[in-house]
Image (cartoon, rainbow, N blue to C red; front, side):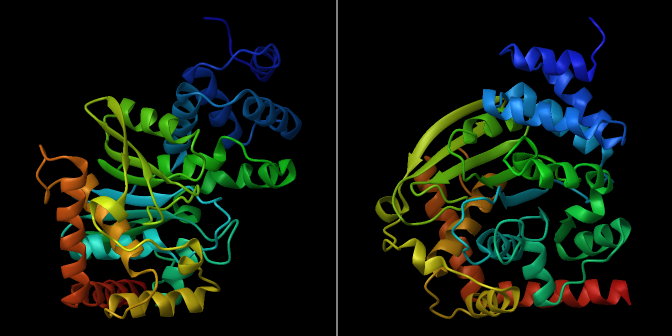
Amino acid sequence: MAEITWKSILTKLVGGDHLSAEESEWFVDDLMNGNANPAAVGAVLATQQQLGLTPDEVRGAAKAMVAHAIPLHIEGETTDIVGTGGDGASTVNLSSMGAIVAAAAGVKIVKHGNRAASSKCGTADCFEALGLPLDLTPEQVAEVGNECGIAFAFARTFHPAMRFVGPIRAALGVPCVFNVLGPLTNPASPKHMAVGCANRKMSPIMAAVYAANGQTGMVYTSSEGLDEMAPTGPVSIWEFKDGKVVENEFDPTVELGLAKINVSDLKGGEPELNARLARDFFAGKDVPFRTTALLNAASAIVADGHQVPADASLAERFKAAYAIAEQTVDSGKATALLDKWIATAQAAKA
């Protein structure tokens, strides 16, 4: 194979050809080693985006990014529930609430996330406002996660090499492959994934990458292009298992009988507001986003697969998982786990 260089990569892209997984891995690795010329990086990212990303390109880039990450060692099989961001809806932190409910229901969760990039409140901002310290060491995160059954992998802690990427992305100002790598680069390498993707074209591509990695779970996009699962109408779902991807459509307003909601029912705001709304939800209050948060928790329970019948239809699995999520909140288990997690993390920091 010919030597891979920035010139060879850019020449290939400008000629209208996609990169191989190896070429994509090479350029992200070189970038994260701090070796790359910013002008070359910007040209490659922009040209690649214009052509449209392929599963091989995304898989290679994710492999390089994970290789530069600090590993997070959590015992047993783990699950992540995460969104790509970028839907512009400024909702409450639905996947964050879903993660806590799923963990309280017995799913071992490793939530990967960062501060807000395109909204007022990202996962990290919400968890911090709830009282979770973000400056734990990777070892402390693992200890807390193993004790509580839930961990938060703060991207800034576990991906130090992203310091070479951030300024270039900011200068570029347009989406690129790094916009979809967050959900694909959890440093705990979870076995199961429940992923909301705002870009419908990218959903099957991400599912193909997870399938190639041997993971199980689903990528979903709502009818409005939300990176969350919501009872606003039909949800497109790409399930991956045993190296294969199967596309389905699931309408929670029909198959679960949930009342149809509007995107305006999901609106959030600053971290303190989103944290208070999350507390209200965990307390069992009738918040307008209750069914949506429960639905996202259910997606993690379905992705994990241990508490739902494996041979049942997607609708039947969601029905079982939604009932588990609802019981977990209404019994007080979600609030109890959140309190335990925050106290354990604060004690670890102290």
